[in-house]
Figure 1: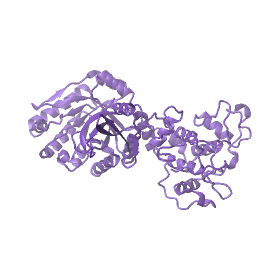
Figure 2: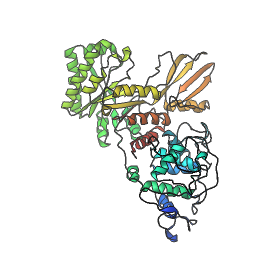
Figure 3: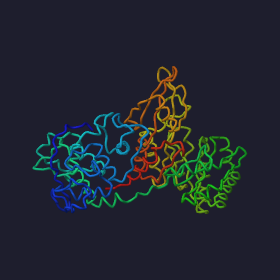
Figure 4: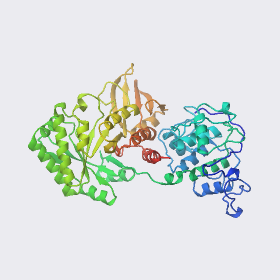
Length: 537
């Protein structure tokens, strides 16, 4: 959003749907109970004190609130993030050049950008110390209350409409319709800065309007949050889970063997730990991408039945909550056999009151996914786990994103067209790839990176990643020796956008490949995405 020119501070007249309180606020608090010494006679005294006590707004010093001072963009966004009960996010990639990680408002600016509540005055500049204008305040508030897609039947009836930026007109109309910002004397004064007192009164009205307060104070359910174990001991995995959002553990304990059996390496201590920490355990049954071993079991009735019995017995003997079936690289000719195996395994697990989740790749229309009868598998299993990654895979000749948002959205929409969204778990990547390119930009090779390794490379080479709005990811380039490299990055911002897209389809939950490969900003960013996606104002 472009920054409008700042004007002088003006009086904001705020109404509410259930009656207009005017500019005097609610009730003047007694002087001895005021949190600041400069509120005498201020019409927003009650609201300022209320927001201060809720931890939403603070003073400009220990004793001063500075009610008539214009509020800065950083101050206003920080208050808005607190109002929504969202967490600051110490993003691994700074969204703006003028918002360094050392600044007090870095985490709240990152949180707002992740969720699309705000953007900069230009792609690289946020202007944190610049006064917030009234029209910017309207836009941010409409986005925060998720009202921007609602139709507004009447254009804002203000005599100074010609001074409004085109991008702000719908939001100004909306806040007027909601009774939150009514203007003064027939004018809205869109380019004038909004004061700290006016901001306090406005935010206080949000908490009193249309039951928004109860929704903000509620906690949306997180649904299934499945995290796969990979490359960690049990103790390491447990510690990683404690620092994550994961509520469903999927250790890689069971694999098909070439001799037609199922190898197992169950760790009872993890099961006990999960029970103590109120988490479920869905061990993964994998095939190690071995099409021949998979064919050998699926196409023989006796071997298939024996494998199902073994898995069912393990579930019963260890009191497991479910199974995560991950068969990849299955021959297209084994499509019917795979469907039959899933049906029979589901029956056996349901006898043990356990659930079956089945991993599938996005429908690519190739041999890789031809073995998946999505509708039939979705009908048989309790959940379908869409592995939303490897859009561009390590062995491919084309460099690109592991999981661009448009590609992921197409894959998810195809799946929920044949499987109810309430049975779908969307798996997100906690990894990316470092692509080596030739002079023409074609891929020569790639190396898989955890997000931790990705961020180390960015720091090592002093890179300045650029946000690509088309794919909703940062990209970065560097040269090592004579070789040009490019990374399509994953971070809290890109993953928040993927999470929000999945939540908008009402999926049953999310999964993560793999736990302990994420950067520190990922889990708070995704908690914010879950909370904000759950708001229905």
